[in-house]
Each structure stands twice: as C-alpha cells, then as structure tokens.
Image (tube, rainbow, N blue to C red):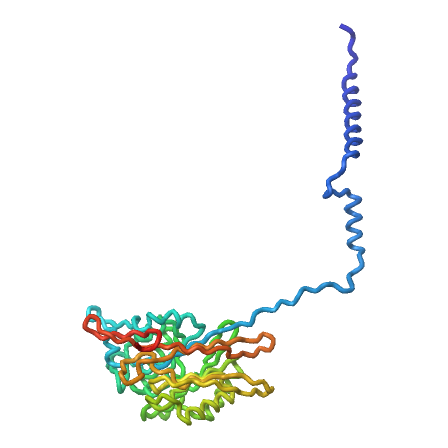
Length: 379
C-alpha cells in the first residue's frame, strides 16, 4: 500500500465545500426572487420612502354614518274592574286561593310586546280582612295585581273614582301591593315628596313622563292631613306638573279619569280640558271612566319655534275587563302609540296611533262564570 499523508483529506473536503457554497450563491443570484421577498436594503428603502411621503393635503374622510332614528311604543287600556262575578271566577275552593291569569291570556302577547304598557285599576287592594266586594265599593284579592304583571303591564293607574272605596288605608295598601310586584302606581302617593316626583320610564333612548288625575272619589273626602294621597283634576296643578315633566323627559303622557258614564261621545268639558293640556305640553292623553268607547281625536299644535306637530287624545278607552252588561260596556280599546326620536334635533314625534278593539267574553265553565278579554268587536 502506498504511503498516505495525514491531513490531506480534511483539506480536500474543505476546498470542495468552499466550491459548492460558491456555486450555490452564484446560482441563487440567477433565480428570480418571489415578489414578497425584500432584501434588507429594499426594506430600509421602502420604510424611508413611506416616512418621507408628503402628507395628503385633502385626505378622504370616512362617510358620515346616519343611524336610524329610535322608536318606542306605549300601549294603554281602559278600566280593569272587579265585579263580584269576576272576583269569584278566579277562586279555587280546593286550595282557598285566587288566580286571574285567564282574564288576559289571549291578549297578553300584544301587551307584553309594547315597550311600556298601562292600565287603569278600578278597585282597591285593601286586603282580605276588608272583605272582597264588587260594585259599588270595590276591594279585590291581590292576585289581580299578579295577573296584570303577568300580562305585561308596567304602570297601573290608581287615581279614579274608586280610589278611596276602603279609605286612605286601602289606597295606601294598594300602592304597596303594586310596588311589591314591580308595578308602578300612578296618581296616588304615600307622601308629598313622592307626589312631587314625576314617574319616568325610558324605552330605546326615549324618556316618558307619566301624570294621572281623576275628577273625584265618589264623594269620599281625601283626608285633610293627606292632600297628596290622590291627584284630582285641577287645571293649574296639571299645567304645573306638565311643565315640570317637560324638563325631565322627551314625552309627557297624561291619563284623565273623566267624562260622563255610558256617553259615547266626549263632552265639551272633556274636549276643552284635553285641548288645553295638549296645547301646553302634553304629547298625548289617554282616558277612561265612561265604561264605553268614545272616539279619539288628532290635534295640531304649534310649538314655540313655529313647527306644527300632531297630538292625540283618546277620550275613553272603555272597559278592558268587567262584568257589566249595559250596552257597549263589554267593548274596549287597546291604544298603541308609536313615537320616533329625531337624532338631529332630539325632538320626539308621535308617528302612529293604533286602536285595537277588544271585548269581554263571558261564559260558564264548571258552574262558574268566566271572563276572558279577546281581540275584535263583540260578535
């Protein structure tokens, strides 16, 4: 075997590797680089060019986004009465309990769909010890409040001619029962401080102020040491309250318990008072007491800035539920108001009024009279 020089193989391998690396470098320069590759020099140049660009003297601004005007719905119904037949229609002898869910189960979806819903409760909730009775001095089980809550109502009018059927004590307990169920009583108060607080509700960015007044309390005097207990119709008082409410809300809603019973058209006095309130800040008026429907009325009012807007008064929404059988007393109205707020001016407009007919279906089941509010006119 011939002599082998130590160290010659590493030298040859090293030289060979150097040649291979050079070839790879030369060949790589011959290939096109992908378009997204940047050398260090190119990257630096690009960054420098971006930073040195002259600012656009007329930059394009994003287009103004016009948000849709918010809308809200308010729904009102007339008198919720509790005659003797109604009281015992909900009684269960086996459990000695009351349940009135059936009264409103057909129409509850329409009520609950409104952003705010209101009913006039023409009875007291003075407690079992005060005895449950219908006409002429009403006192009903607390469970009617549960049924109103379940149906979707938010506000319960408590200022009407039956407010004091069980005296001041009964009126105060009625307030407490409603508030325990997260229902807002309107028109009766536990103190002067509470009477001075305007009831405010908000829906979809539109705020509502609610006021309520009654023509009287069937001759039962309001206690002299509690003048705040029940709101009575007094023009000066109402106008003062409206002005106060305007400073706190977008919309002022006034409920009036007035008119002649069973008269199907509003009187001159009703129209005169309603027009006065609409001209002085009320956005719309809902009312009851006649126990029959009276036609509503649109009214144009000129605002201080000269703009003319439309307002509405529902003179009588009739009975929502009762056991009365006089002509037309089984019919009522749900009145639904749709309002829209102009985001550019913050002014709220009444854009639609829908009157939904209802009637009280009376029938016998299991030996008892039953009462259910249904849509439409009485067959």
